[in-house]
Image (cartoon, rainbow, N blue to C red):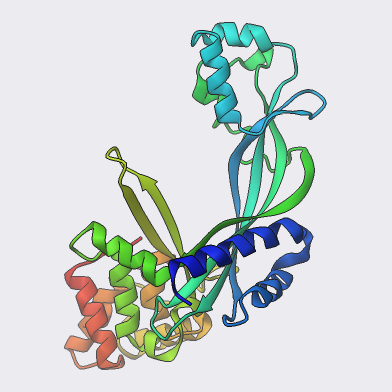
Length: 324
């Protein structure tokens, strides 16, 4: 079941699923459809993240598409005008061309494939809406370069939140990632453990790993690009599966002993797993880094309110800190 060919086949099936299921169906329906595609796996939605966009295409004044890829269109048109931006502006001034963007929301689905922290497959399905964004050759704001033409970063274009939609929302498979295999590939890149590996190892060594599955509380944002030698470079960061704000760590500066222990226990209860204060300290920053030192200071004077395994995890982090 864990072969590359199996995951490639499942990826094709999920891509086809996204084409036939309307975006309005929602994550619950998607999870049910994923279960039908892979009955040997139990997919569940753990997180949805929005507020991002991707460059779209080019439309005319009537919203008819001239190109689905703004960047490619701009590069080709500029080359056709001998890299003369002024000539390109003269050519299209007054023709009402506008850029579009794809505003998106990513739904993360996970399914366990084993008992280890990274033994899960993660599917990212994007819910996209194309919107009209900015005018390309408006007389009052002609671009001075191709970057300004493609993706102006002024305050008037935060993410096209109030822009005119084109067509209906649709779904698109972003990626399917067998996580253990992906992180194993990352280990080949560098001899030393990267932060994501240390994070997972800390989870498995702590009371959190003994109490609950990693993928119940985290997704992993992965990214891959080619370096100048055309070699794949992989990146991965843990993202807390919080559909809402993280709990607030209710503690005051200098708190120690029983009061500190109670504040940590309240935070862990609100987050839903042991040692949440530690793992959220490294990711969502809801607890200060100084908390780790305060905990070990308490241990050194005899306040042993943490299990030994958790004390070792905190000490290892203090000896060699990392964060995301």
